[in-house]
Length: 129
Image 1 (cartoon, rainbow, N blue to C red):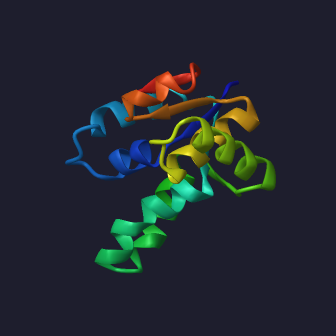
Image 2: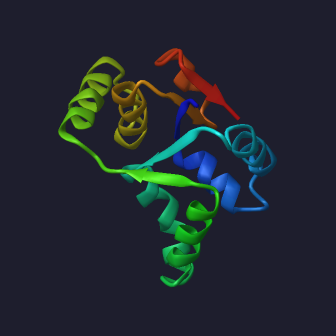
């Protein structure tokens, strides 16, 4: 069983049937069903923004969907924050939310899955959808 860190882009695409990456997100979740899938807390917050704008009760639907496909929210730790700071220092155009996802994968020794093709330049253990 592998450890997989999901970027918000993958989970948003999974939840939104009209997202351009929806099919790819469904496929990656099917392929990783036997793996441990993690959503960093920072990415979880990103995932919740659109549902909260529609109706705060929609956040519960997000939680139910995450539970249904066994995606666990991983808290932000001091070690992850420090690794994210190192990434931001090295890659000036890297946004903090992205650095936190990449740092979570680095600290946990996990593969990261994203829709952002530029991440492969930063972390080899990256799969894009």
